[in-house]
Image 1: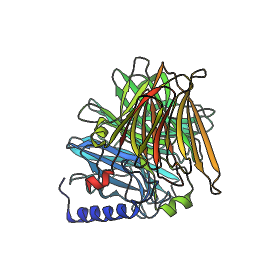
Image 2 (image 1 turned 90 degrees about the horizontal axis):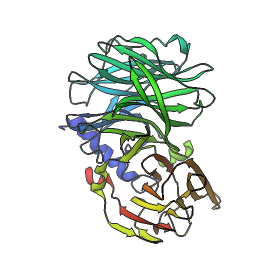
Image 3 (image 1 turned 135 degrees about the vertical axis):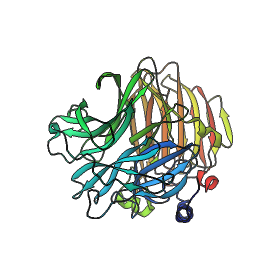
Image 4 (image 1 turned 180 degrees about the vertical axis):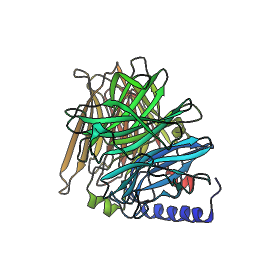
Length: 473
């Protein structure tokens, strides 16, 4: 990509900001995050002219949520990224003055076209808008007809929650799903169609939830064909500050979706994922890794939020979604160590890629220890009798007393449990047998004399991981 002088200046400033925060022990080294300040949902993720573009919800003015813009970065391999100037900012006094919320990007006959949720009146009015680029996705022009969709379906009433468009094309017709809610019923995904991306016809709810178990708002829908089936990914919001990402697999015919299977995409902090189809015909997904600390702590750190390592999605014969980190990650693996029996491996930092097989006997486990002095760690074991994957994390509180959190999730394992564990500063991504994901944030009080430990029966391969920013900028 040929950068303008303005874009090159931005790249240089971003590199300087990254350098200032590089010593933060909680800041990831090989996961994507902006140079500083707040980031949440991935937006507009697409491969364009051989390069991957990732946009994201971004607050350029602070490390907590607010002032939503679209940040932007580009990569040739999904691992190394170059920071680019902010793509879209609110226009004062307009339909998007209160913030540029989440959305997607499509290729409209060679014209890169972004769809985003425009917010006004302190975010209580949410409409859908578009922007296009004529210079390799660096600068963007908002369409004069914006907002292109402003009427909320009658089922939703006068809700303020009508957002996160996801657009695709079937034949000559464009389709869009939008997340929303129906009062006293639950979350809902609404379906639309258009011939020109400007005029949209409402069809019907694609899927409606149950407020008693599915959250009050559905956000950030993804709807795509995978093999012979269709997958709907939904971020279920509980109306407060938390939520869970689920996926629903089924058939789709005549604009009607018939579910046959439902699963959980991640059991912990991964939220608001966005996927795209690349030129290798891979369905690749990013997800926002939420922080698990206070706004004051984020402000002191000067940053908040990271993106998951992108994952390749497939389906198995049982309609389950399989997830594996993109194979490109293996290209940056560093020093390698291996255990074939119970023991411990010392590593230089909290930045490793682990592949492990542990016996699903209830007695075997895998742990990453952040410090031998404080004993802070995260451990993984399997309860064979209850068929549960158990994640246990121990950190030190303000008074230095140990605090232990335990997360249990259903998982059916064979004789051996196959684990992929990505430890990176405060981020820990855990994928078991490719089907059960649990992503965590660990804020150890100290990081030093790190180790990977195996108890019971199994085998472990550990690779130390570099900083992608030292290599790429």
